[in-house]
Image 1 (tube, rainbow, N blue to C red):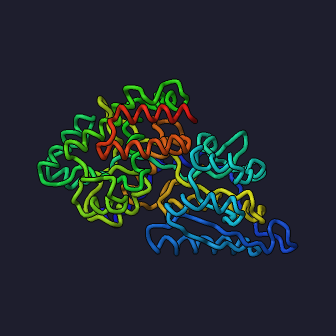
Image 2: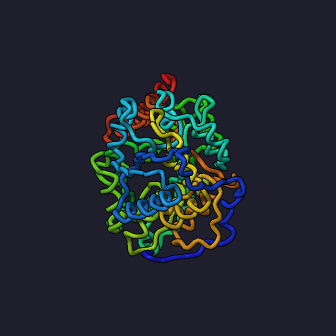
Image 3: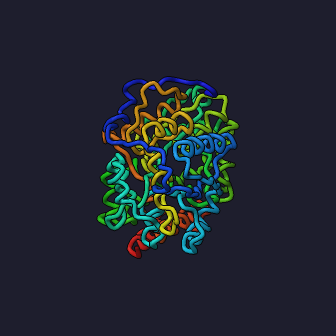
Length: 427
């Protein structure tokens, strides 16, 4: 799988629809308007490798060449640290001007409710940013557009095709197939699932993928709207699916003590055959393994299931920025079709706005991710939801703590589901 490349066909260029609405960024005038002489601090999550930092710095240099009166100071921080300190920095007025953070009510929405984000509603109108409607909804709070949505992502199962082929295991077509595959992998002396939950957020993704496949997008809508209780039998069953993989020994031992990176390493080394995580990991997987990798949704009881679809981290502007014009000019640059294509080719991410992808050179695995993501964008495919970005902090804490308790045999799936319903009612 490593270093293989493919060219995206015209069918993947569905992301190019509505392209005419996007405007580029012109160089800032020398008279000093539009943020002349301004410096903005841009905070992002620490990338996995130094090469990514070099690419981002080169991209920022391109922006500065086009906007000679604006300097961008890049800052990086581990995600766990950002979760801890970002809101404190923003409240104190010492935060970055522009920062990359999760889309949806549980992340950007929470910051907006606290009055910490700059209102970008007028900027959208003035610059005619053609963000997909479903993505724009995720960064709209109380009628105001509060950010640029993150990249389109899916959550599913990466699996070692080489191991599956050697053991004569076909790609799972339903949940029974997946359970049988796990048993066969276990009997061969390997770990079926590389599961980590030390950081806590991984458990929400496990629930999201199993539940989305079980009840579909309409069922997820019903849960998130409060029409179906989170203590329902379907939620219990989705939780119990993972609990059964634990009790049968089909996942890593002591998952709540295993970090995300450590679980990834088990998959890269071939010690574990299946890695449940998001499409964002595809580039790292391709650079880190020497075997063929497949990527499929978590299966349903009677079908192949659906991916959990969502949005990653996207750029937001601090309400306390001293240079809003410069910050908006930077966002406008990030929204150009040229930059969108650059992110696909250099960062293996899918922008939340139309980009012509025909002929883009990429790996087979990421080409599949592009095609799957295009179906989210144009509405031709069914996708579930990543629960954490659509839920409140109260609910997310209950989900994190509850799933960790289940994986350590301190709570049953039924008890966790009851806790989720109580947290949902609490708001």
